[in-house]
Amino acid sequence: MTAQQPIRLLKINEVMDRTSLSRSTIYALIEKGKFPSQRKLGPKCSRWVESEIEAWTREIAA
Image (cartoon, rainbow, N blue to C red; front, side, top):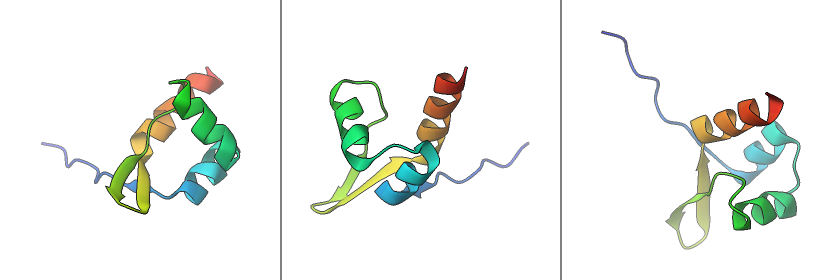
């Protein structure tokens, strides 16, 4: 049995660093359905699932 990796949630600045995209570009791509959506954790708190960002990056690079 293999241990599952914990799910990691990323802040917008981490997503920007990993993708080299600006904040406005990320939100524009989300609106078009071309980028993983954020998860709302509270009224002023959003995070992205790390594995979804990694999958998107791999897809773009392929």
